[in-house]
Every structure is written in C-alpha cells, then in structure tokens.
Image 1 (cartoon, helix red, strand yellow):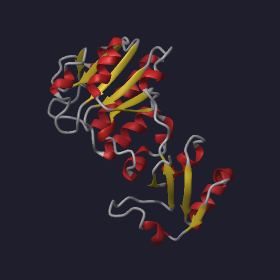
Image 2 (cartoon, rainbow, N blue to C red):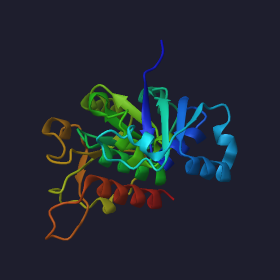
Image 3 (tube, helix red, strand yellow):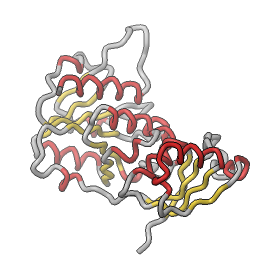
Image 4 (spheres, rainbow, N blue to C red):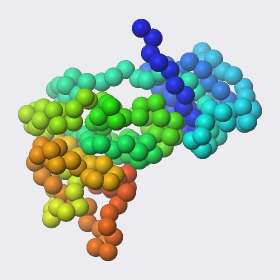
Length: 243
C-alpha cells in the first residue's frame, strides 16, 4: 500500500529531506537560483531525484493561503516510517523525551522540534490525532530538523505516560503555578518533560500521571513564556547538565 504524499516548502526543510537517506522524495521543484545554490553545496543531493524547474510565481501556488516563503524550494515527500516508543526504549538508559499534551500550533511544534534536535532530546511524544504531520508551516519552522528527531505518535498520552512510569521514567509536568524550579532537578536517569497546550496548559487528568510539577523562573510581572521558548530553555539546560 502506497503512503500518501504531501508537499513541504523552504530551503532548510527541503535540503534536510534531501540529505536524509530514509526520507522518500517523489519530486523536487526548484528555481534556477535554488538549483545553483544546491549545486554549490552538494550536487549529489539531486542524484536520482526527479527535478522540475519553475519560476517563483509557479512555486507560490504550493504555499496556498498559508503565506509561507518557499525561497525557491518545494518538495513532494512521504512520511518517515513510524517508530514505536516500546521498541525504541529497549536496552537504553538515560533517555529524555518531550511530551506535548494537546499542543496544536504547527509553528510552535516545528520550533520545539528544532530545539529538541539541537539539544539532543531523544524524542518527542505527540498525540497522533493532534499532530499536523503534513503541515508545511511545521516543516518550515523545524528548519530541516524533522529529519533529526524521533517523533512518537501515540493514540493516548495518558496511557503512554502510565506505561513509561512503569518502565522507570520520571514524569515532570511544566506548570507556572509550581513552587519548584526545574533547574533544581538533577535530571538523572530516564525523564519525560510534559508540556501542556498553548492556552490551558496540562489537562487535569493528564497531570495525575506526573511525578513532579516544576516551573521555569521568569520575571514575576510576566504571565508566561511561549511554549516553544520554554521548551528551548529546558532542553538546553538539561543537555548541559547531562554533559
């Protein structure tokens, strides 16, 4: 059975896909300028790929009404093979996963993916139904990092957290009302970093599956940080602690 294909746009998103040997690329659409840029960097990236040359206006139609800059790069691709978290964690220790509880904004998700890949987070757990896995905006925001992070799409976040607790993972929920600063945690062993939705935070029922609630200390006159900024701060701190 053939997978459904979809389009991504943007220089880093398309180049990232071209560099990933596990990514199936059906077609690439380039302007003359973007073709020259690829050939200057690595002409082998276009080996065995169907290439179509278009002008900027022709490529604009692939961005639709999303108002995304394609930069002269468009590709038709298929999703990577799905990973199961159960198989991934076998015989591994000292793992750190981010878990997104009802986070739905493609730009935020893409930015979180970019930060997670940059700071060596082992994977991101998302609810399959809420994950915009064919979003041009998410791929553009991830800036090529979709190719460098494990995405675990699960049917039920709570069931997954329960399973991971039984496998010796500590679940840390990030909530502004918590009294404990996340930087006070040692971050040893296996950990889950649970982030709630952009508006309402972690769902009450999901919070029951956390071991600890922690917060990021910010100016008391500021209500909150954007979720992607929060995630980047946490990921960077944990990477430094683990080193």
